[in-house]
Length: 441
Ligand code: LLP
Image 1: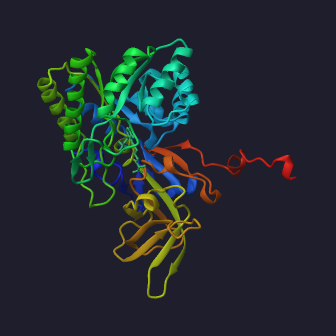
Image 2: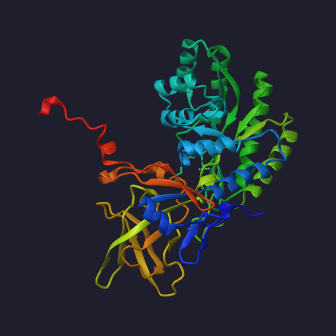
Image 3: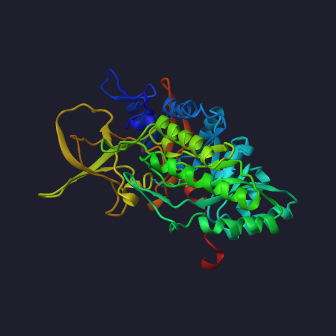
């Protein structure tokens, strides 16, 4: 069965009687008029359709728990939706913990990830009631244990491991010792466990955690990841008589940014993971564990689009045509950072046959601030509303105030209704941390 991550557009996208693009029953031109641009628009139906697909696809394996990787896009409204959908949260900073906690999220259903958790972050996580820590390295084991001891508490942990599976979009390679900043190398697990047995009495090890990559199109990666982890669980049981009951497989399922992308469905991933669980629990003779996954991009990516207003344009003599918009690398760093490609339409003129090649440029003082290079679009007029699809994941979450540009607003649309979930930043907020010290006056 197909799932929304396999399409470029949110599931409610259509062209209305006015000839404008509509998402969630809302005319994008009206949204641009009401909320101004740049504007992130999130389709609630697409988000919930993805969370439901994950739940449905994994229902054959009852010991399954879904955690939304908040790094993809997090606001308090998104935390609420995830809570309603029965998802936990994968958090990776003090700011993400704070957002989840203040949204009223049940913190026992959160996991704290990260390769350099600070003393303050760890204290905050323990005080906030974060359910489980994924411990990334030896330094963190010592730090976490000492903080837990000082607070007279025991913390439940997973060990983050580097499973030696590297994924690429169309192929994968296996190496014994992957060069990665994250997690324990497989050869370091035993030392970590021995430290836990001998010294770190305030940490309770319940399982293993791995994450092989992001924007994965290759289901074999998940199959192999389960096998690597189950093999370790068996080995740890044999060597230390410790029974690990939890396995976290990370996130990574890909989405479709352009027609060239062919992501697989949530059902295919789920069937692969469940098959591998069944086969490898038999093979390694371990009881089927609780399995967690942490999808981010595939939950929120397709649901989000960004609207811009077309401004100036420039025809380079005998060269490119540049069309500038009122946002750019500050609201979407992915094109300049990863040469990421997007599908683009003109929201007030999606169907015109009269097309030309154009390059959509951002407004920032940097030549690399290009949002889409050499794409074919209907002729753009100043004031047109330009819609970039699949910007829901890692757009706002990696946004910046470069050039002191304000962070954009986000709205949630559903059934013809639109609600702000992020107010546009104001100039007062932009400057609120600025200090002019006495000494220079
Ligand atoms: N779990 C862990 C431990 C992770 O590091 C990540 C993503 C996820 C889950 C969620 O992965 P997802 O399902 O979203 O692929 N900024 C990049 C993506 C970085 C992903 C980092 N880790 C981008 O814009 O493509």
